[in-house]
Length: 148
Image 1 (spheres, rainbow, N blue to C red):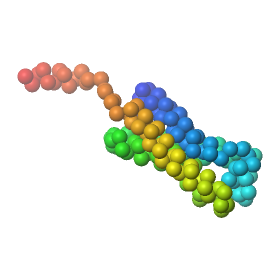
Image 2 (spheres, one colour; image 1 turned 90 degrees about the vertical axis):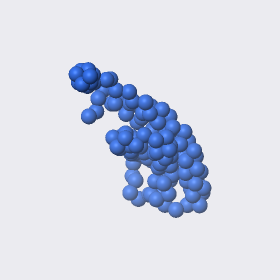
Image 3 (spheres, rainbow, N blue to C red; image 1 turned 180 degrees about the vertical axis):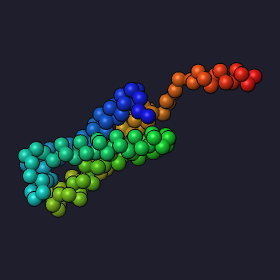
């Protein structure tokens, strides 16, 4: 069940995932350097980084929700999740953009930067979710008192 506190945490995680994907995606700046400028399927006038960063943020938040729902709260799982989110722009451009030698080195730089930066953001997200203290159940306290 999604509580108010959990929804606030996931909004914070969405913001952190957007920041995680934004830094590697900023390696390609300007509309003239847009990897999808000559792609036939992307006809919008906006820079494709808007699409890539928002998709990475949503996928990273969904991955974090899955991790928390399955109670897989280990620091290395969150670090890998953050790295996946931050490396998503590089993988997306590697698969979706027309091949170009100049673009390949930028994509490689995005992957390396995303690996390191995403791990740091993933550890920050781990700090948000590692200590989830729930309020004690008052009924449980009464039952324990009756057993004594």
